[in-house]
Length: 214
Ligand SMILES: [Zn+2]
Image 1 (cartoon, rainbow, N blue to C red):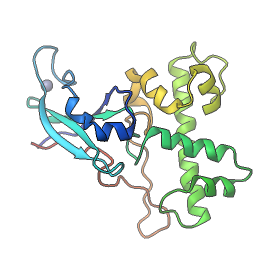
Image 2: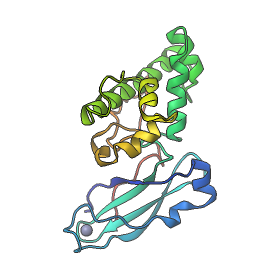
Image 3: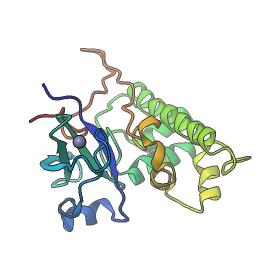
Image 4: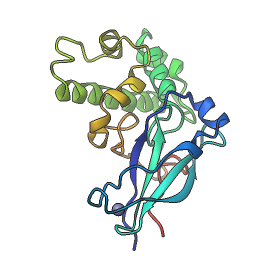
């Protein structure tokens, strides 16, 4: 039986739309095998998986025939484990920050498929939680770089000289993506599922690399 799939970073400046229009997944080269000794293994192309959004976006996969595990190369424009781009995730958080009340913030963020104010607020709360955790973790990893910087998108943006903090952090913390929470890092977010209940957040088809096969 094949082991689990691993997500790695495809470093790129492309926007999500450019990534699709240029079919940039075809330009992705095999990374070094995460499991084998250097020089012992060359990963083989192993197809693609499709993202839900934007339509037509594919993510390239490779396989280690020795370890029988696959890696997928997620481009910097995409959020990990959730739909859309990192820029879209940031926009949601920033627009919510400017709102006067929690209800107004949830309304501004307009979470997809969340119909009630209560469920929209929960949706937004989860996003704020992972953003808080992300910034705190990055601060801990790079204490000197972020000394005295408040754990907010605005604070980090100023320090990094960037208006797209989440995307910039994907590059800045590239060595630690496995331990950073999604959607910047590749550690899956804790999944809340209440079957039949109002709250439901699962890994939807096409958001995450499927289990290894082959
Ligand atoms: Zn290998």
